[in-house]
Image (cartoon, rainbow over all chains, first blue to last red):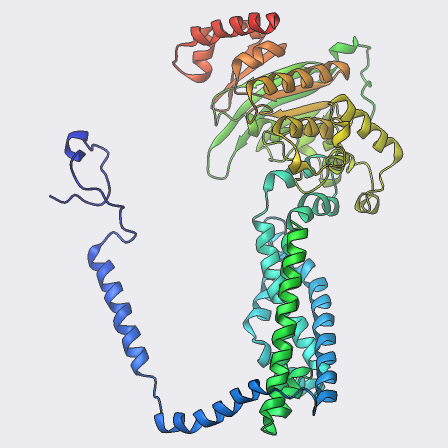
Amino acid sequence: MSRSSTLHADARLEDLVGSKWQKPPFITSSLLRWSLTIGALVYFVVAISSLDVNWSRVSEGLDRGLQFFLGFVNPDFTSRAVDIKEGLIESVEMTIASTVVGIFISIPIGLGAARNIAPLPVYLVCRSIVAVSRALNEIIVAILLVAIFGFGPLAGFLTLSFATIGFLAKLLAEEIEDMDKVQAEAVRATGSRWTQWINYGVQPQIMPRLIGLSIYRLDINFRESAVLGLVGAGGIGATLNTAFDRYEFDTAAAILLIIIIVVMMLEYLSGIIRAKVQ
Amino acid sequence: MEPNTHPFILPQREILMLKLEKLTKVYPTGDKALTDVTLEIPSGQVVALIGPSGAGKSTLIRCINRLVSPTSGKAILDGTDLTALGAGGLRRERRRMGMIFQEYALVERLTVMENVLSGRLGYVGFWRSYFRKFPQKDVDEAFRLLDRVGLLAMADKRADELSGGQRQRVGIARALIQDPALLLVDEPTASLDPKTSRQIMRLICELCQERDLAAIINIHDVALAQMFVQRVIGLRFGVVQFDGPPEGLTPEVLTTIYGEEDWKETIQKVDEEDLQDDAS
């Protein structure tokens, strides 16, 4: 006879020895368990089949796609070299400036968004800022800021700074909430001021993560700067957009290759730095 | 701070350092961690606080330096009611209470020296501490204390490079550099091996004698407590069950503190260990 999934307090050894054992299921009711499983499968099949694929359009587009990929075989770095260089410099400037500004603003917001160190009103305000920043996608913010400040890297810089705040402040706050409470408590017990407590008890614990996240965000901001150009917010993305508009796929491929190389370099660099600050 | 403001002169050893009056802590969950704890500790006296897990030992010492806020009652340090202090006053009084923790509670990614000097945070301004520019006398005292606990060569090592016993020595130096009047010690030996435990207990008690400090030491190991302290307080369910010299811990007393168990063995073992210790 199969027994129910949990042992009773009056379980007797004689009844259990020789009986099968398996891990108690996460969802106890077998009816609920199976209907959830089957329901999920059915929904998946229905959702896939609702995608309308226009095969004749796809076969037309394949040719254009092929052109694009052929551009990678023979990328053209030279004929638009000046545009590419200017776009790249603008992107790098945008990336570095927005990452630095974003980090400086997100540190106080991150402190305020950590429930274990901030009083409730501060916490709510800071969490709201984080939520707004995270809810609005970069592209949407960029379109809005381009409308306000016009085309160019200023809109891109502001967009990326804004996005950095949401990203970094949230992850920083989570790191602070996960810190070792006792280390911080020991510093508080010495009679330190709040600022000293943060500096001695909290900061050393979150520093490796803060540095790691900052470099990661630098990487994200560079990649984003390529996308933001497509909506007019300057940088290498603007150059890329122009190349697409002129059907210069070989130049576009060259730009994409440059982006890939820069991102890989950043990846390598962040690996080295993160290993150093452990 | 003038420790000696009493109307009549008492002998040095008789200065009342800490007084708890009906100290009570009820957690928001309704758990009564402490009930009407009343006791007096003169300067220079080392008190062991024993009791089963959950008896309120940790809560008691945290209610004194107000890492936990007591619900009612008073904790009076050298004439100042700690329970009535505002934020600034509390910071000033916390400087006079050194705390030593169970898991050492060193800031792992700071150096030994930074950990020791963090005991001076209550005395220096933010920017001085931010740039690690502590007054020379603090730095000198830090070196002296590190030498006293035998870790002078480790000053610039990071705290997480040290062994358990070494970390606890740094924790002791950090508490002492505060120039405290009272030491609050929470399970100092719980994570240490028996030999290191004895060394650490001996060090704490010696330092208390040298500096005439009052100390409360939470400790699980009854035998170890009996070896080193002059007075034992037994706590059960947040109520003081026993307060007296270590010789007073009879099997009957231990039963009222911890519950039914064969205590004869424990007490006999203490005597044997003492003999072995003397022999070695």
